[in-house]
Amino acid sequence: MPQKPVQPAQPGVQQLPRHVAIIMDGNGRWAKSRSLPRPMGHREGVKAVRRVVEACRQRGIEALTLFAFSSENWRRPKTEVSLLMDLFVHTIKKEVEHLHRNGVRMCFIGDRSVFEPHMRALMESAERQTADNKQLSLVIAVNYGGRWDIAEAARRLAAKAVAGEIRAEDIDSDRLGQELSGADLPEPDLFIRTGGEQRISNYLLWQLAYTELYFTELLWPDFDDAALDEALQSFAGRQRRFGRTGDQIEQSRRA
Image 1 (cartoon, one colour):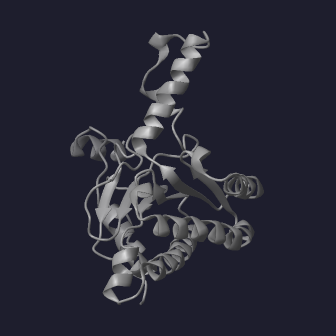
Image 2: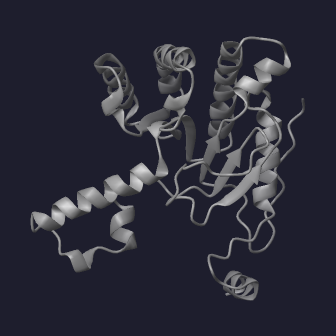
């Protein structure tokens, strides 16, 4: 399918997002619609991840955060969870060298305490190996939940206050934000969810406060460069006001 070029930004809009966050929904339905077992959908979903990571890198997007496994996904059948964990490990082992050669920095967010030691070691090794890469920051959210993220940030701040490192009255939104996952990255400009659902499902709750939302009926294994460019095209046509009026945005651009 030919790619659709992203058109130049109009006054008051930003042409490309610096940071894209995606919920990759629809692997199971993709397989079911083809009378295939669910694992086939997840394997095809990995192929879509490869396409989108490379497409973001080529387009100069700084960061891509993917919701790989939520804290609620443990409720799925044990056989599917086990398969997802095996696929996760296999994919990291297979992809990390390729990502490293292409300048992609990998990092993982979420509660790692529940994972087996070998899995935690694998994530830490991938982070160390790619730590100095600058082309794209690829953030994988695994056993992640937005409420967990905020609660952990609050817990760390409370511990610092008890230890006398900070005063309680010094805690504000900026300081709390510095304790959240991905605090070293710009907050997401564009959120994409595939699969037709229109909710954020406990994903980056704090970080998405001013993010542009984009929903598509495409199932994740069908998401490709052209689909990404459609989302970028939608973003490019939006005026991001952050509480200001459209007139204020126009005046600031003319100043």
